[in-house]
Image (cartoon, rainbow over all chains, first blue to last red; front, top):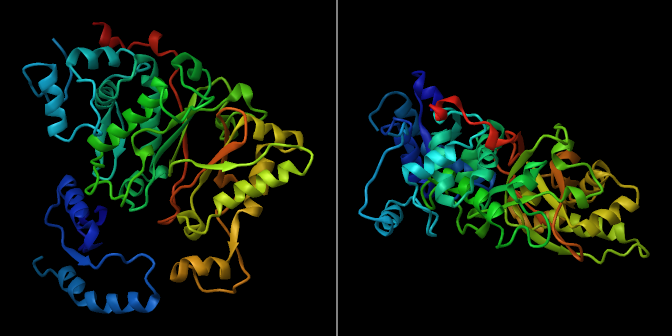
Length: 71
Length: 361
């Protein structure tokens, strides 16, 4: 959020179980439209191969958001 | 005419006001004392010299601004007497220290909440229990200090279940968890002194922790009782079913009953010695831990020893409770870069004599 406040392009990655909390915190911080990518839950403890696969899956969307595509 | 800045809501009577507070989600699920302006003003007269608009810190996860006035509102709701208000203020200062990492404590799916240990003269002045049943029901100061802190986390920090507080199940310590250290019964220096303060300074030490896990050990000297006690405590600390055994960061708390503390002291062990011995014993072999944690356990040789914390000082030791067989271990959360780290903050002295000038005009 500090990056976002300073004008650096950001994308929030949050697992599905935390999506509501992320939206709540974003509203509280005054940035309700912050670009967000929702991941399956849980991610913590996932094997490295599963994380690699997930990263490959979401990377294009993250890149598009960082390059300015509307959320 | 009051100078309070908090938003007002109106109700036709006390009962309606209480129902309104429930409806707004501003309670912890139990009835609260309705924070009328007069009650909040009365609490603010005992703020240890702080004016109501002083900001103590930002309460995560939504970074709500914890002013002295906001804390007073929640202290009234919790049923605090004025004598405990400066202790509540110190608790809020502790949890809003960035080192405490409150947003993570509130947001983790693990079941942790603030565990408060009070040291110094304020224990007697405020009536904070340290002996038999101190973490149970029946002690107003203990109950209301922890409850006031919980209400601040919820009402100022947005830590409501399923939104700001993501604990999957939660635990009863999220209502309140506060005790005083039994300094007069302890063979060790006060916990706050071990953390850099002087004995005459009252202080709170706050750790994001689970509820206490009871451990049992007969405190006999003859049969190597001290070694067995250390083994029992270490076993509970390193429970391979627990978060700390796998995450291996942050701090955990050991609460020794006075008999157990005496047993260790008679063996010539001071607090630092106990921390060192527990650090050496509390851990798991990587191969054994993998049986429980699977992919949570990093790659490496099966016979590597994985301590439950990074260094001995991460195992806090306090003395409290009645004498006998049982002590307790309070595990924490070891996630994120550093896990849950305890913060110690002094309590402002003699609140009854330090009324801010603005309250006298």
